[in-house]
Image 1: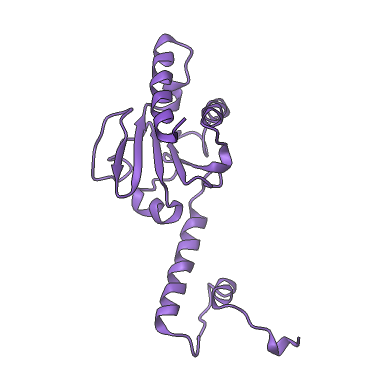
Image 2: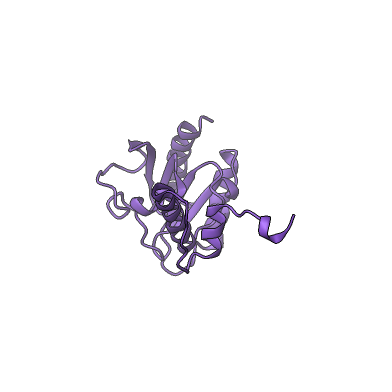
Length: 178
């Protein structure tokens, strides 16, 4: 095959030249529009930093102003919780809301979550038009939401910490059918 016979998909071409003007002759306007939306989504996704691979479409939002993501102590706690739910960091996406004020309108198209767990973040702070109490599931617009106390409150060896962990576990068992 010669170089002149090489065919490159429009998506690949647009990705290679996303900062350039490309004239696509013979491509329908709706294809260009769809391609443009894909490029915008890729660029927006690249600007939002999170831990994990989101394989199970479960988003976790935390609130640690002093950390890029979350302190090791709380990451270990979260990892144990995920293991108890038969998941790992590859199955979820963890975003520190304190360092990236991202709302549901930005995250929903990128993560396509089935569930979002908010630790120390109110529904209002996340841009949801509804409010609901901690430890109660709330379905809204195809996503199941839970709000929980901050990880630093849950991750304590005190009597209160144990009670809160047991409430968290009840919610997670119900959510993940464990």
